[in-house]
Structure formats: C-alpha cells, structure tokens
Length: 96
Image 1 (tube, one colour):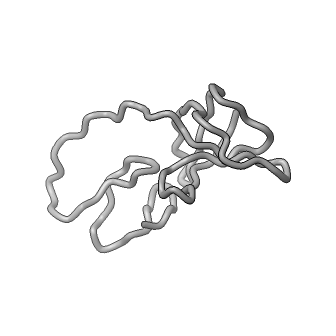
Image 2: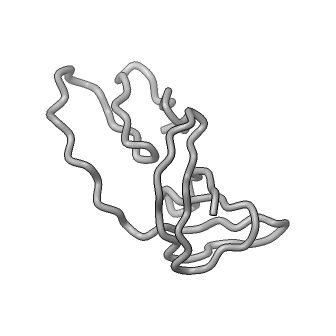
Image 3: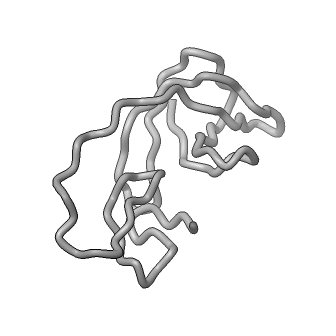
C-alpha cells in the first residue's frame, strides 16, 4: 500500500494511507522528495473519508557516520541530515 509521512497528534511520525489500512499491513511511504521506505502498520489511529492515519511499528534505523558539521540534525521522517539553520526538512518537506 502507498502512503505519505504524517506527524500524529502524539508527536510520533506515522503514515497517511489512501484507502483503508489494518494492523500488519506493509506500507511504501513516499516523501515529497520522492524518497521511499517501507513500514508496518501498528495501529490505525483514525479512518474516514477514504483515508487512514496509522501509527507504525518501530524500525531499525541505519547506523550513520558521525556528522562532520556541528549543529546538523536528522529528520525523524526521512532520516536525512539537514542544516541547523532550517527546521523544514529539504528532503521530505516536514517541519520541526
């Protein structure tokens, strides 16, 4: 199933799915930048109007090399390193 990243009311990152989703569904999440990754639905938080908002099972994150520049941060949605001068991820477009 195709999905996009969304920040849930809990502050956690989840997925917005067009259609109905259920626990255990495997999603292909696509950010605005076009980057994709897979995730598994843990809980359907809300469903209606042809959309499901889902909390996701934790995934193992890739180990990253230490950052060369101090003050950089990693976007929790797409795990890309971003400049400390901006709080909008240039990879996926989410705001922090």
